[in-house]
Image 1 (cartoon, rainbow, N blue to C red):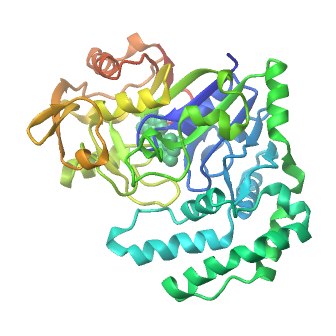
Image 2 (image 1 turned 60 degrees about the vertical axis):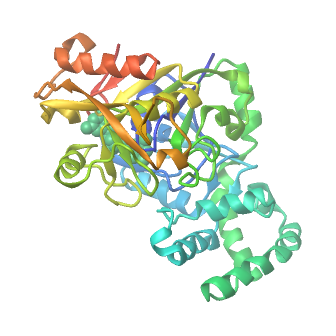
Amino acid sequence: MNVTAVVGANWGDEGKGRMVDALGADHDIVVRFQGGGNAGHTVITPLGKFVLHLLPSGVLRPGTVNVIGAGVALDALLLEQELSALRARGLPAPELWVSDRAQLLLEHHRRLDAYEEERLGARSFGSTRTGIAPFYADKYAKVGVRVDDLFDEDRLRARLEPTLAPKNAALRVLYAQPDLELERLLAELRRAREILVPFVRDTGAYLNAALAAGRRILLEGQLGALRDPDHGIHPWVTSSSPLAGFATVGAGIPARAIGRVVAVTKAYSSCVGAGPFVTELAGNAGHELRSRGGDAGEYGATTGRPRRVGWFDAPATRYGCRVQGATEVALTGLDVLGYLDRIPICTGYDIDGSLATEFPTTRLLERAAPIYEDMPGWRTAFGDVSRFTDLPEPARAYVQRLEGLIEVPIRWVSFGPRREQLLER
Ligand code: GDP
Ligand code: MG
């Protein structure tokens, strides 16, 4: 039971980085198992605010080992940038290992992502344009480049050459862009090899040995359950599974190793990108919640885009916790709601005149209207709190009501983005 997964119950940006940082103190190794530089995990430490993209959030705790697993979309240039940004802020170089089986996200993935979003125009996916969808398309079409491939250039050259024709046809015909050239691609891969050499290792073997030695591993998810390609709000999903069930696959450890699944959810809702969002608030109410949310308003940690915000959505979160297999919940952002007299909670959906309490497929979700109940607000800032019983009674009642609705114990309550603004119930 030495493996904990910290994963999102909703649309992403639930505060996973903050929880990985907090729980990381009790773990030896933090592993990213999927996604890539499209993540933006905010962690506030005594040294200030950090936004991590590709690096596991364990890099902010000296002594923690950090691993980028085989399931990650590995952008070597971004990795180099993030490491040098940490150095520039005075942090010691983290212990970092990169899986020899991870695949490389390359410049043409980023370009293709942006071209396709442009082509779709108003019907675009709201991608972060970091190349994630084209990367995973290549991976599952079996034409991607593995880290270990970088160490045999002749082999790499022979394998890459035939893969360029379909890409070039798309570049030319769909996007009116110049062809990819093999020599330029190889030069890019040589540069990636230079960056990665000190970190490459068989991380599966490393992690399994660590488990056998009783070391504690934390698996850090990116995005949230509702962005899962199978169980999320398809097609408004991401291209790799952010579920705890996939975490062991992306990390390369046995499924039975996971003992604890911490699903992170906010005390309200936020969502970046397109897709149905039933409790979304428009106008002034949305503007107010957005400006009070997060550590400095709800704006995308990677893109700076204003996040869509709304009230807590119980059917969505109960479902998110279920598909994550949550054993406990971390509720973040409770402090944000302190300005309200009454706080609406969505307890069900009205779909064509019928009540739905199960989270439906996207086709039906697009027709859902929220059914709300109101809870009294507490109209106060929390100040110094260390125990749940220190919170005002209406805030405790709000947490208890959410717990009843999502059917998973809320073990952690976060009431601010800083390390000390977290309590265990
Ligand atoms: P992640 O992608 O799940 O790691 O979440 P993000 O870092 O993208 O977004 C979460 C935002 O909420 C960040 O701005 C955090 O600093 C902030 N945050 C986390 N926990 C709390 C909390 O309890 N209260 C407040 N006000 N902000 C929080
Ligand atoms: Mg984020």
